[in-house]
Length: 270
Image (cartoon, rainbow, N blue to C red):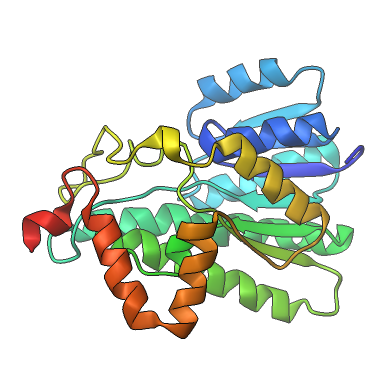
């Protein structure tokens, strides 16, 4: 990765932070984006002597995403990998959720990907680089009490699959990576029905795949120019398989699994 330039959104924590560390180990130059500039500055210090640019970026803003790409080009002159990782989750039944919260999740997860991809795409095509979307198993399987999150991740998958087809003969590589449940802060910041962050994770984080393992596997998939990556067996690969062969069974298993979460909206409702 020496001489290659990688942009990572949502780089201040979780999978994004782990991706930055993994790419720094492989010798890449990094352009890191997130809203929390203090965390980006801390990460930049940790990653020295790697060449790192940090840009405070709210991916819901088209102009901020355009500025991120422009700053990267001014600093490095090229883009080889764009990883759309910034994400926001939610946990509420659809009939309870405030629609402003629904829109907020779509703005971060889907439109953040749209905006960054739009402005980076010409440079990625020029470098025959990699366009990456970090979705989730929720982008393959609808998760109850995660309607906005699943909708946004399905939308990202559809967007990137289409861009791959449109660039079938340009040399652009497109990867859609779907981790299973992975240790991160996303569940703590997930929005409740009233739009407020839930604050605590409802799941046993210590039993999940680590962000570091996830990042290592994602970067390997990018280097191998894979088109898709589904991580974890039970919650990932098996779920996608059952969805194709036994969808009704998957529905029941998914409902049961999600209903076991601490303080699950599904238990309250049904």
